[in-house]
Image 1 (tube, rainbow, N blue to C red):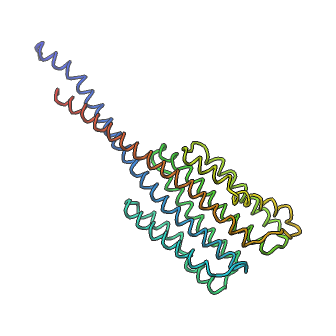
Image 2 (image 1 turned 135 degrees about the horizontal axis):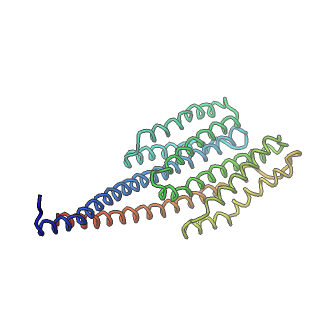
Image 3 (image 1 turned 120 degrees about the vertical axis):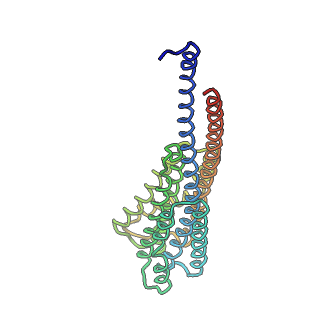
Length: 313
């Protein structure tokens, strides 16, 4: 079949236009997929923020219950910490629903909290020892920390890196709470401790140090300032000093410290770590919003170019 010169020119001119159209459709698809990943990661961040409050409630409840069962504190603070935990869990359920998260997230949180009613009842009946209750609470918080880490692992590698610091600071908050409980109890009993108990509290302290070092890289200005406030706070230094005091007198006891006073003076450490977490989350929110807005603009631009190409086809 013979083609006229006009048809040949038309075929030659259509080739690059068709190529541009195909490329435009491919780029638009990639932009849509990346934007969807960002939106899903942003929803996960909101879930992590909600779980962070649940963790804080459980950690406060654990500390009060541990001291109560150890005979070092009255029961008057237990109900308020339980109420804080229950309110946070209910709020988290609402967040999961609002953000449209997978049912598996809700199931994971409910499974993590499954033993909470049982341990509370045993505490009220004083049918469980302080150490056993402490272990149950640690298992609860560990399960929730695993859920936080899971939510931080998204399909977007860039988004996951944004949330990595939150995971590490959540673990810092958890292990600071554990160190506070252990040291308060040891101070209150004022007796020698076993080698296993010494290893536990020193390992807990080492975990705090490692997590802080790993999490502090790449923080925004506000989060760095908040971290500096934590590191300069008297309660933070008392927590670190307690490990050294206990290590020095582990075989003899006689630490010369009041357990309840120590617990009270270090109680603000958790709130200071939470402040760092909240600021990282705010920075993450802003980053997600900027990223989604940027991807939306790119989608509009690619759509416009692709649409213009179609006019010539």
